Image (cartoon, rainbow, N blue to C red):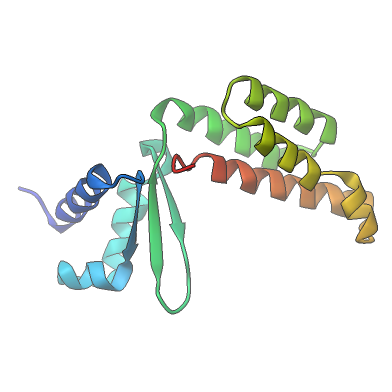
Length: 158
């Protein structure tokens, strides 16, 4: 017998299937009202049933509207992407390796030539030196920027 969590999951998956954008935007409070539950129940469903391992990416916007975006991620890329971002976050950042990675992503048509150029420009040492950051601070910021940019590449709406 299905429970409330199953009904919420089914509803969200139906909305995703109908979406031409391959993502949906919901408001936690409104969805909770629709199912007569508390907003934390919606959080539970999102955390348990819409994880990256299951092929979804959740983007939550805090503040007044409490808007949540749920993206459907290309299934074949989920594990590879997750490992890639974890390795970037766990290892010392190396700009040369980052450039090689961007070239590979471009060759595999994961990103366009223009996207690769924009990322390379954003990661250029000159900008960080001009901002007065030391080498370690610059590498940490570069690592963070690259990891976040790769998260955006997962979203199939582009």
